[in-house]
Image (cartoon, rainbow, N blue to C red; front, top):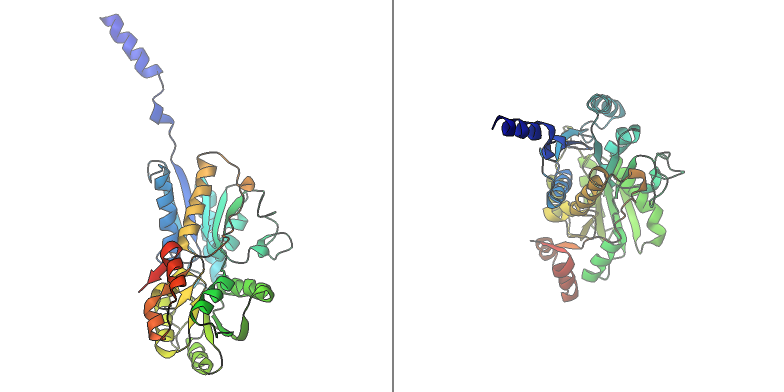
Amino acid sequence: MRSLCLSLAYVLFSTPIAFSDARINTIFIVNSYTGDFVWTKNINENFIKKLSAAGWTENTHYKLVKRDLDAFKNHNLNSLEKISSKILNEIRKTKPDIIVTTDDDALINVGLKINDTPVVFNGIHAIADYLPGGKHSGRINSLGKPGQNITGVYQVDHINETFKLLKMIKPSVQKVAILVDTTTSGKATLAGFQKEIKNLSIQVSDTLVSDSFKVWKRKIKEWQNKTDAILYMQGNGVRDEGGRLMKVQEIIRYIADHSKLPDMATWEQPVEYGILLSAGVSPDYQGFYTAEKVLSILKDKAKPGEILINVPLSGQPMVNIARAKKLNLFIPQELMNILVENGKIYR
């Protein structure tokens, strides 16, 4: 009996327990804005959803650390450098297994400054800026094989697709006026648009680049008899006369209440809030493919530099029916079929 007990004790203490070697990976997320900003929130929610679908659960397979640059608020260079430096110091001390950056500011101010940890970005507008010859070059060699420790998901705005959607509803539209703020993402979106303008079936009647809501209101009023449509490119850095950072919903509500022109956006949430349409980017796509790359690196031990950068080949059509009714615009059946099969309808 004593011999049996000793044998059992030997087996118990000498045999490795399977879960004792299991290691929880640390995923360090750096948001350009804040975690509750709807675009960022939706990306991160879809990121976690994809991890869960792959069998990865928080606190079992990974733990999340989230930090925000809050770049809309910390708009000037000194503020961004100060908070970025604090986050970089935390990363160097805690040594996470992987870093995820959302949108341009987080990649520029944090991701590109990390050399010894895998970095997966999403929400990047002007990808050419990060490729050889671009102003942020040196870390990404190509889309197909980025090299070094970085890969990610490019954000394509699909403005030409958006304009074609509008032409399906109102064929007479030829000229468009553009509204955009001076944030990093706003300027990058505009720069990408300007590079592609020769390939687009769009005539730009005017472009407003400003963070002043007072100026935005004046221009929107002025454009009513001077252009055919308005393209809301981005307004996340817009402030009222008291210096308060405005919510996207407030800006969209003003446009819907004071403009009789059909309007477009480069991303999903403005359509949800009241802009007429978009064939732009979806946060679902950004979050899904970010998680796919993180899993490849952490689970399958793939090298970031050998994982291609995702480039969405087409946008997702979406229309706000309430806005169409207010503008007395008819949605043709062909477009409704597209929306039902592959798009989104907001009411």
